[in-house]
Length: 307
Image (tube, rainbow, N blue to C red; front, side):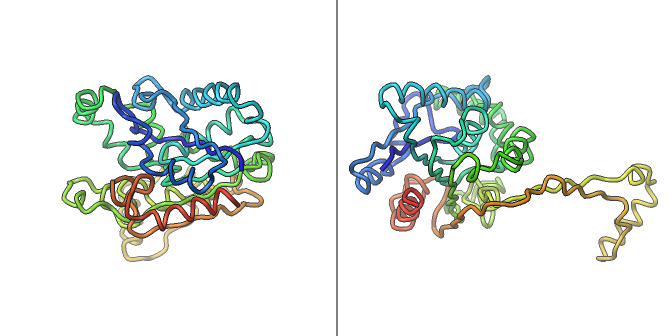
């Protein structure tokens, strides 16, 4: 079987952070399942996503350099192909690398997203605060990674443009790049976080960091904007319309324009699994490093890698 590369997400670093702390038992379990396969942690410099001056394009370029260095040690890597397992922000790094650097077909064969933050995380906004800045600096010796956090915000134009790239003709992830993606995400938060006064760590259908819908790559794109006439409405007319909508009554549909030009002609379905009793992180139920949910997580990862 081809080599398996591991790519970590935002914040999985610091001055004393080892690969074992980031991935837990996952590398060992993959080596046990695939004894003749190399399992490699792509070290994009342990501090890179928490550097305030580094953005997604920079990290994807670092991935390109890391792959070139790895290929020099393992001839044939970029020709024969490899599999990738990512966590969290690693989803954006891998997809952006494919967009910016990958040939067609791509050397990536199967791309497995573990709680991939494909469409952002509400915690990106929280992570920009002053308290977060000082805690990162004091306890991890890092910055906050403000540019990466910008790209992790809900509705980030940078991230949206990246995903829309793969809806264009000739840019289909599976048919044109030859990459088969799989999305696996948890749906429970850690009980200790329920007392934290931050809504994003205890939302339903989320893993305390990423919403299940934000991980799902089965998406399409419709642009909705107001018409020219809607911009000329007065306050009294707006109040009347709001009142009608609050009573579930229709309003003039001419005030909004829907653009369906961004719809893909054909959309390749991406296998998507939601796991119970699995969170974004945590020693017991973390999707990558948890100790009590391996029987749920590992078989799905193995099935994806061997598809």
